[in-house]
Image (cartoon, rainbow, N blue to C red):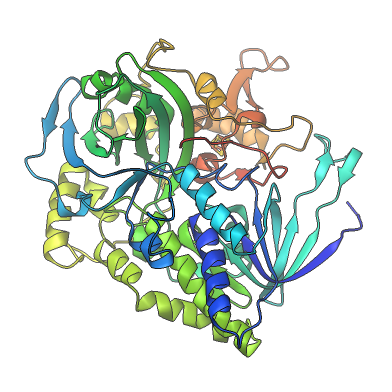
Length: 558
Ligand code: SF4
């Protein structure tokens, strides 16, 4: 479509008002306020959610190391902390029983950490950034990363007001071109512009291993008083994940009788019926979890993917005119399953680098290399390096992984091997036939009757995520080959998309043109932007592209 686009110009474009992007903006404003020799660059901070925090979702237990470096008196300044961690416990779950670990693995010891709601915490940090004089453009979504001659020069924002066929409606507003001296991607996990960066500048990812993802599904419950102490942290391994698959659950006591409960499932599952939402519902039915939720009420729901392979799957952090921060750079410690502190630290280091670049008037890779050097000599790198082989240790199943985690701790992170090669997650999925040969049975999706009291179907849960999309727009799930979906995938894998999506976007419905056959039907309006489909689809014919700005989930208390 040939349209006239407005061009905006800025020095620094920050994409994403999550922990990394906000830490970057806040630190940049602080550094420049302290140094009169550097002029404040023009900064544009854009966020695709309808407000800062609308798409922010985490367990969430926060290691304060990052925020205490950014805002040392964050407690006095009123950071919304649910509770300081008051107790830790770890359980191995069987279907009906639970075995408490006699001791906490040091990596899971949360003494000194805080239970938070990430979406509230991000809202607070956003207020700090705005008070420091940086505006946040919420509801402004990036559609394409602009790269000219190998140099990132900005972003094109999403067109608003197109119909389902991509034709302009009466309210059509073309997306703008935002030209920037430097673009910092702080989009969160598996961001679409980050993906463009990897495709258009392949050297960013030529050295790293493929990322390993989990899908985490979470609810916040209000429970009767006294059911769980604020700050109580419980982690579980085992049921309902089979022992050869990766994942586990959590229960965190928040303020005001609220509880964060969730379950995270590896996307390298061999099972084509792998369903993170269903596993979470089964998890809540386990006696250990049920006794905490009994008599309570589910208030909020959300889901997102988690980048979990750590150090060896991190991309190069810079290119000409580009830096990558937080989850966009795979900065998550898989052993602790924590990334908020690393995202904040990456924002701090990116801000320091930008000040140098502004001083030199040079945003080339040569100058931005110092961001990578800062990272390599930081505590963030030391932490990630110690857990570099953690995820790979679980390739042989839960027990092998737990044994390997102990060896890894005793060997400074090496374990029994170093940098074990891995495939992309979708390549681990087996066809129905191969699954049958390997496991002696066809994939059998557990049937759970949702009672609407403790377990919910996907659409009931999505309603509690506040998700909203305008129906009249091009689908933001782009299927490059429906023939594969409606024929080959049905026969070989049984259409895994209808299982792994935690928001029921994908359904196989009767194909009226082909009696006895089914066809794929999409409902993009329920999408919670978790990105599971883009990662787990075995044929890689699904591509998640950014819908209109301000759409998607509207998380509260998550
Ligand atoms: Fe997640 Fe894809 Fe489903 Fe959206 S459509 S909720 S991104 S799996």
